[in-house]
Length: 410
Image 1 (spheres, rainbow, N blue to C red):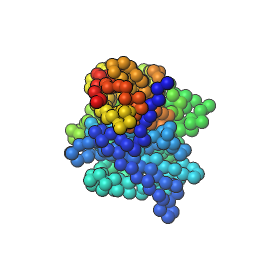
Image 2: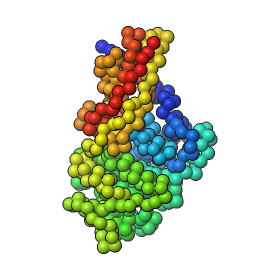
Image 3: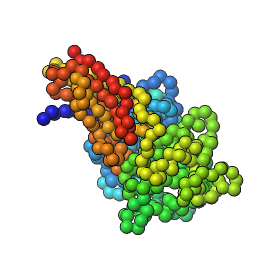
Image 4: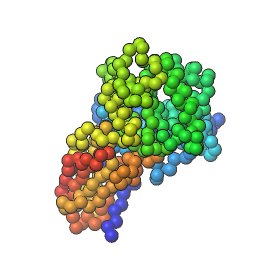
């Protein structure tokens, strides 16, 4: 049986940007035990334009099962396209979720400290002043909603995957949030199975729907999508979230507002945006017609079949070690609408290994982290002495293959 070893995740291929890490301890009066910050910065000389903050939910995150999203090629592709840093904060607490997801617990201070210190180390001083795009899951949604109220001038867009029951269940919070977030592009995502009372996550269902309806009555640029395949896990929801953010950031980069498109929640039929319909809570807002079409497909299937397959081959490098083994590293840039489902490794022209979740399984962990096999880290073949040529393809969400990358090893 062939044995293959992954190299520790800290050894990340330099040709695909760089990951910076910080371990921050609480200051007196702060409640979390420690915060681990991982920040991926794309390999480019132009100044960064923003920070994409990917915030996990409650319970302590295990780096083995839910590694930082800075190791994820799909989220990296979004960040690279728009010259954003990609930041993954992960907090450890002794007790309740509020020991980190209340910004006053110390997590807000820790965020600013991490951005400042990583900005200094990376020679990116702009990092601490840049605007944010916020993605939150469950307790991370709660944190994100509070950060929008506390720093509305810093936030360009946000997506909430469940959560926010304490915030959006509070009429006073909603009354403050609505006017602040009315013109902020927002995407609320739920799993269909958490919409029923039997789900322990049902507690967020009505509060978030109430906030959604109030925002729409204010003319808010907010979308609602229900994943028909999931409960509280993220599953394939990145396939709607990433194109949503891409559309918003593309318009922002041009100094424009997204053109907007409306869809009827019940019938999923398009409507023109005008004063008669734009404040109707039965209509969900999408940033443009293309995302509106993706929204419709995802709402029906819980996943997407991309309009086109991968067009760019991955980059692959190989180095023979003194013992004859071969160290492989790679980078890849998937289509934003298609993502990555699997990697196919070849040795001497033959398929050798397929890495990643099996067909039909979610593209990400329950917390939207890259699953085993799809993390950006080097790979070691201890039997490399017998082989001289390696190849790599990647598959998108629909199983379409990328072009092949091949290298010779001497």
